[in-house]
Amino acid sequence: MTTTARVLTGRHVFMIFCAAFAVIISVNLFLAYSAVSTFPGLEVRNSYVASQQFDKNREEQTALGWSVLAQARGDDVHLSITDAEGQPVQVASLEATLGRATHVRDDQTPAFVFDGTRYVAPAQLAPGNWNLRMKARAADGTVFQQRVILHVPKGAK
Image (cartoon, rainbow, N blue to C red; front, side):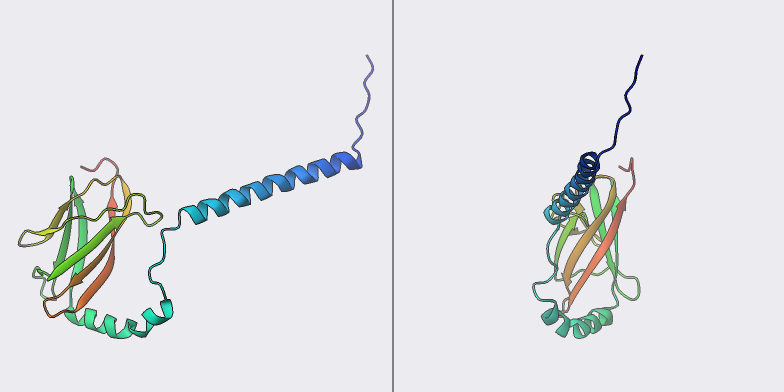
């Protein structure tokens, strides 16, 4: 039985080199496509213009003294808004978007109803972290905006 030794030629090295870079470039292209296709969008159109009113809006919002807590309870989302004394607040208007931080595929617009102590809305939530981006208007017209993190544990119902 005779065996011939394999020789590593320049052509083989070049093919290995090209294959390695082809894998690297393919992975980079896939990751770039995934990042762009799952980008949820912009918070504001022009961050400079939004920054001009930031301090004023923050001071007005802080002066309200509101605290916000969101919880998932069964098939409902409970949103508690309380004042500085811990009393429930009934707002003039409430807009909210409930969704994941990473994509907009699961975004929902819950229809919150005030039950005398908190706002309740039906929502089907899978386990994991959710963001409730809310915008409430006080009776005096002050806008209160906040992103509330809502965690739904596995097996929660």
